[in-house]
Image (cartoon, rainbow, N blue to C red; front, side, top):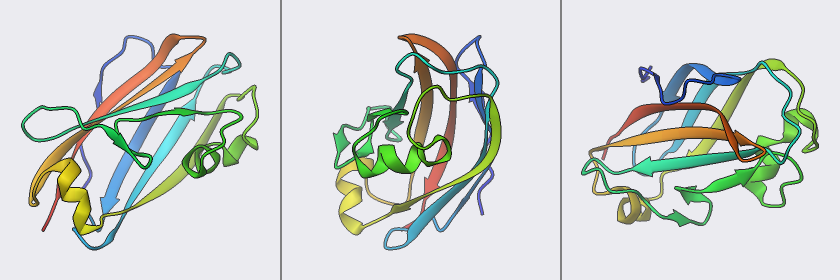
Length: 147
């Protein structure tokens, strides 16, 4: 189990992730990311989650099949990932203040190494939330992926 240190990348913290724990970060397994999500101000203006994933060499990964550096709608989303993210507020805006435990799973297929680099490796994940085009929260953390 990994419990990464979270680094803030924004002065605004209307949306915050805490208590992150990561299990099964091994190629060929299903990695589980558990975290607490705190939304302290209503999000009503086309809120988006922008995920930036960087390889150990600092290069940014592209967005391939909803994995990597992707931007997701938090309301009215149509992709499976967007619908999974929006399930707690029925995928509809406004998103009212809430604190919840969340869990996301990612299949670490051997081919993912073409995106993240050859395991073992460390990737950096940055989560940026925007509401009406304005940043309302941003945090980053590292994940060690085993071979």
